[in-house]
Length: 149
Ligand SMILES: CC(C)(COP(=O)(O)OP(=O)(O)OC[C@H]1O[C@@H](n2cnc3c(N)ncnc32)[C@H](O)[C@@H]1OP(=O)(O)O)[C@@H](O)C(=O)NCCC(=O)NCCS
Image 1 (cartoon, helix red, strand yellow):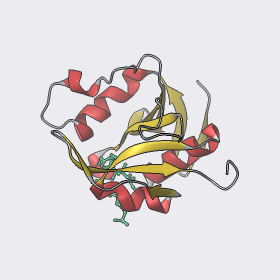
Image 2 (spheres, protein in one colour; image 1 turned 135 degrees about the horizontal axis):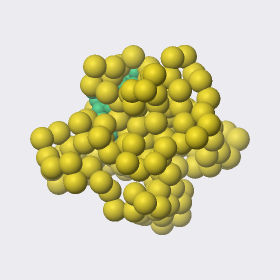
Image 3 (cartoon, rainbow, N blue to C red; image 1 turned 90 degrees about the vertical axis):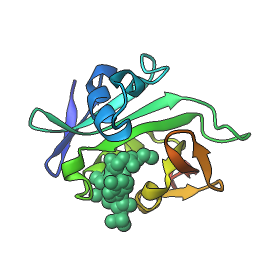
Image 4 (tube, rainbow, N blue to C red; image 1 turned 60 degrees about the vertical axis):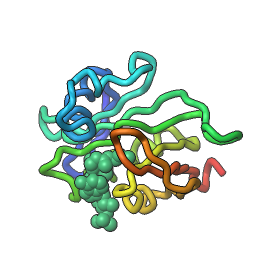
């Protein structure tokens, strides 16, 4: 697949199998690998950030209606950066490129610790905290850029 280069990270569309290992390592620590395979993965869109042959960042986008009434029809899931590279800008590069490619509003359930990360990339919190069993406190967030209104 073709991709674009941003800093040292090559961002390109990917197959579901390419994102599962990093998802597992970062988002489903200590659980069976199968827990990192999400329902609907086969129909979702996936992206990877590559440095050389190494997948250093992943995210996926699912066709999933906003849970509370009118809202974006796409959900961001499985946003993860390699542990040794977290906090070095890779996640932001990947997220911004995918936002630009999609060109439409999108929502996610964000871990509390990642709220500031999303806010810095144009997202806003739209819910009080809620618990996702086994994963801890989250907030619903929405990205809606100025172009898409
Ligand atoms: C959240 C995450 C995708 C951000 O990517 P990144 O490349 O580390 O982020 P950047 O370097 O572009 O930006 C750093 C910001 O990410 C967040 N961040 C950094 N390390 C993090 C970590 N281990 N967990 C959660 N958020 C983290 C912080 O908000 C940080 O902002 P701050 O410096 O103002 O505190 C990445 O840190 C990660 O994979 N974290 C663990 C998994 C996770 O929480 N995923 C999001 C699920 S909603």
